[in-house]
Length: 168
Image 1 (cartoon, rainbow, N blue to C red):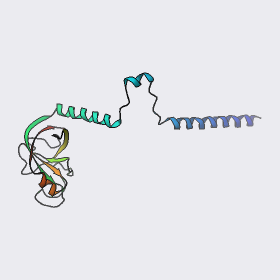
Image 2 (image 1 turned 180 degrees about the vertical axis):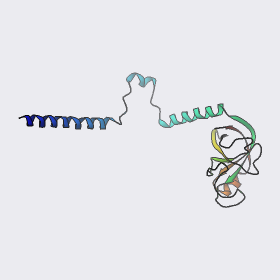
Image 3 (image 1 turned 180 degrees about the horizontal axis):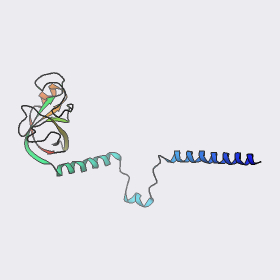
Image 4 (image 1 turned 60 degrees about the vertical axis):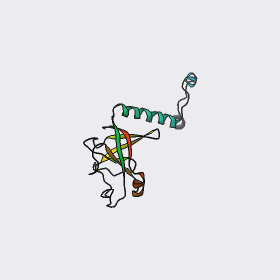
């Protein structure tokens, strides 16, 4: 009789454990329900809108602590890995990073420290770059932006814009 009671007790504990594991597994990924009174005050906001708002806040914070340079000459160089007019073709910048199209740019480190974030307003949006490189022709208020190919660098020519830089 005692053996039967112990066996019944163990079966009950086993079933209880299985039910608890199942319950937790079903509810582990579930979001807690929003209280009814918050739904009118705080509507659901799509993730892409939240991300855009966060990016605007980051951009505003960077601009608030940035230095503005006016009438900066912007030229372009390519990332082709062969020695030519755009550079050595090694693919490695003066800061030791790999050159990245539309991210890396060459600066005069006496004006903009290497590693700084550079922002240029283009078509109403801020383009964020990183001061990774230097070059013998990059002196004063001038930056040289890395693009994918040599033909693209030639076709983009020379531009002038106001930029902001922020030392990281």
